[in-house]
Image 1 (cartoon, one colour):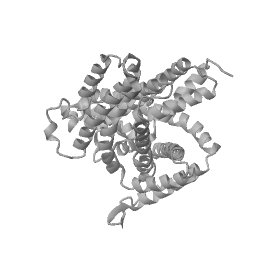
Image 2 (cartoon, rainbow, N blue to C red):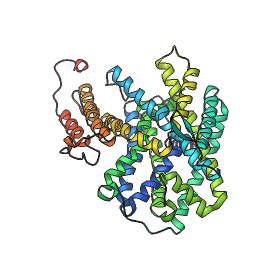
Image 3 (cartoon, rainbow, N blue to C red):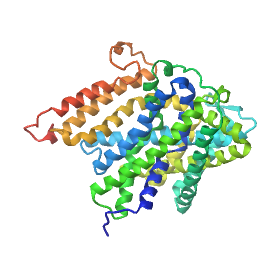
Image 4 (cartoon, one colour):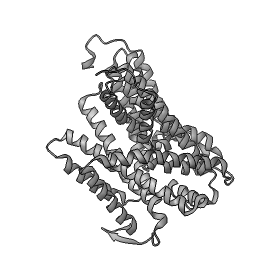
Length: 443
């Protein structure tokens, strides 16, 4: 039976579900560290971070709704498939899924391990023994739960999300009411270009990439509730997105302040997980650490199960001759291997990749909203995304340490955003292109 209306409770439920989708526990580690490094320039850095970590995912959901779930419809099939594969690999076995186990280890297990620095040599590389054992057990559980998904995961999720939200609210309130240290001086790139550094730091959440997939999932859920009209779907997806974005902004702002006022609690920290753990330990003691460890550990586990399941389903549809179960085993093993790179190292490795792919994702999301304005939509989308990719590669290579000084004349190249101006110019030019005399499909 078709319906055109959701109850207020269902609408908020949809919004909180979207919030839970985006707020993987890994997202908790970036704002505290950015706030600590930004210091007195925190406001600009935070604004930039919110643009790409909150604003773009919200716009991504809206774009998916406007495109009726077919956001890549104007791309050649091979390009659409390649982009989808890249997104699934990035938010799956390459970075996001392994990161969940590392965040769970750093926040959930490390505070309780006595000899946490013991290492063993494997293939000529030193690997932390505690981290190795933890990640093997973690992804063994992930593999088992992904092979035999049932109501247990749903029940844990229903209990977990309210607990996680309650903990985050308590954490945010403590930042407001408990006295912290004086905000320090900005360091590194936060000293010279805090806004652009904050924008790029928001890439690490990977939520703009995820919004493309989550938007399609939410549309499917709305259809199952009987809402088939595209305009009505868009309305509820926007409402859900606003609820999710409001929650994300609240969490990120409080964590930025936490990091900026952490003082000695952040000394020696190489990522935000250590800052968050030290803060909770200092203000709430062992009970606080146990609560944080339990909730973050379960949140990471359920997120990892969801990512492995989603990736396995996608690649099983792409390559049906290989069973879903084999993909689950394969991705679980790959995640366990990648995870032993270490959290700080994994983040540093992921940055060049994100610098390359994020401009394409942002351009795709934004151009989808204005596609009806183009006289030649197919040609325009392909051209704009090609330009975004070309200049995104330049930014990615620069971040990877390749000498790109030959391109120093490009606007915003030093800030890692060389893609922005060329992409905007090409988009503007495409708005004034005349309609082709031939079919646009062959443009």
